Length: 297
Ligand SMILES: [Zn+2]
Image (cartoon, rainbow, N blue to C red; front, side, top):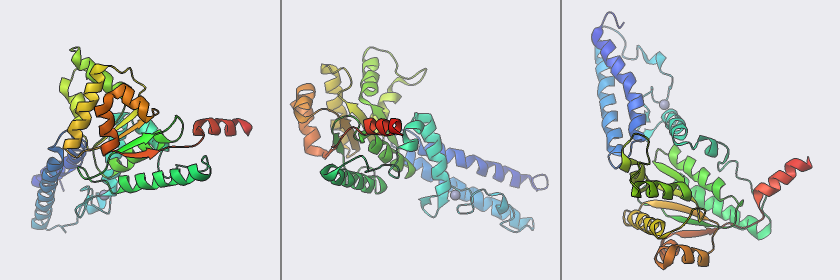
């Protein structure tokens, strides 16, 4: 077919290129990425129409090459109606998780694997509520229109597990999520402050811009980093700018309200308690219980 009709080969090659382009654009940084997904999709539709036309004019049925599609739902266009097709979602998620280093973390820590067995009585009720609230948040996530959360509680009570589950679900919906430990986040700011690029051989600002631009920012373990005036003002500015743009943030911390106030000043703490929904994590250390159960076997 390609030898007989060179125009077909050209359209076909161009079509094959649009899949990776959609993925790249979906993972794109900054405000323009959603628009560019739309633009590529229009380009794809035009190419597909062109290919059908070439087939028709050369006496072939329009669906002549459809058998080669690996996804019968979307014919490899990546879209099922106006929704992102599951095949593209899986591809995006896989690419995204691998490139962001989140693959290992989110592989096993999902909503499905979150177990209430390690919590008792009131704690169990509370943790069930937390998981339900977060599942609703993640599965109904809308950029610029969703809540922000403050996860409060000691180590080993599922804060990271549920953060990871939220991250994965929101990524699967096709949104841009940045998940970073407080330690890494602040050291990225420190590096720019001292004139070192925090990205290897790349654009210096890009690494920090992602904290502002992403649809959902998850800061893990606030309080584990070395806090100073500079990091406090970074945190304040970051939260402030995201709140102004109605962009969601999830922060988890082992610190209590008084400790937070002491370390991050009154203005940060009042932002946290004023504009974030606090979720309390209670119970006995899950990791410790799991270890004990493993050794008891
Ligand atoms: Zn598909």
